[in-house]
Length: 405
Image (cartoon, rainbow, N blue to C red):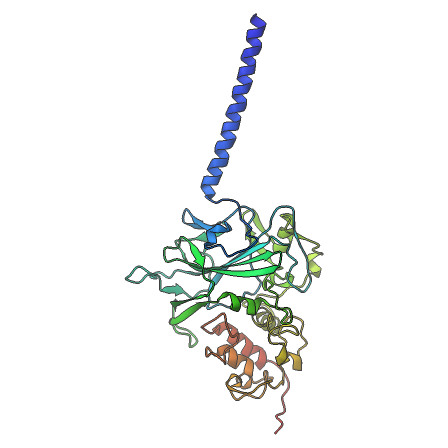
């Protein structure tokens, strides 16, 4: 009898310990979920969800724009210019699939991949109007106050828009979302949006004003497709940024700084990456220590190359600005434009060696007039630093062009 009681007591104790352990595990999971406050990432195989939070990729919680589990941030060596906006880029994939390395083209991501790009600005010291809406945004290259861990510190930034690129069974689709004034949610904006903002710098310099009013234009879905269609024959949408040469760099992840390509391999999002020494890499165009030619070519590659390539939307111009184009007529050196008009500024050649002010490319980069400015969409202001870079690059070129009358 005593043995039976003893065994029953032990059994009850073991069951109690098991239940207690299960309860503690459940509590830990619930607390973890509460801390993040996000459901698992949702892949929508069709349709246009009305809210960004329907994807559960990035959401605002506890004063931060947080990344969900499995959402991996990444950056580009040289980013596309968008009115001095800062950007937070992410990649997510379903379990059991991974992308494939491509040496030149966009990495081959599988169906189910969701890429996000959040456009935002750091807040200046005074950036709120009397009616409570934000108007002033900081023009700065300093990212040091933007981040809170892997996400963004909402006290220091103003969110503008988040673009979703989702790889569905029928191909990639672009879906734009615009953040509300309360900075709590972004809603579907299929027809785009126009937001009046003011860029504020610490001081005026080199002819750039300390304050610059502009209209930030969120592109509609068709405009998104016009840039992301790398082949103008099939006009299929593809991501622009995640090419090996653009993301072959280190990133400060939560567990330390690692090469982005190696990190994608580590988390199971990428296969087939060769030795890093053999992987192409565009330089950081803002790095004064990098060669002038490499800096200029990197900026043109990411900002212009998706259209100006043999298969792109601007292939009829005969001007190719992608990585690896020889520095000759194809790159625009002594090449006359395919069509005259206001876009030429009465200049004869895309690039005149040694004469940036006589060259069409910097003239169009400096313009903000429709029909003249290049790129045609994606900006309302001029990238003053890039214009200075391209002019310096052209000024250093040897040779002359002959004008035939």
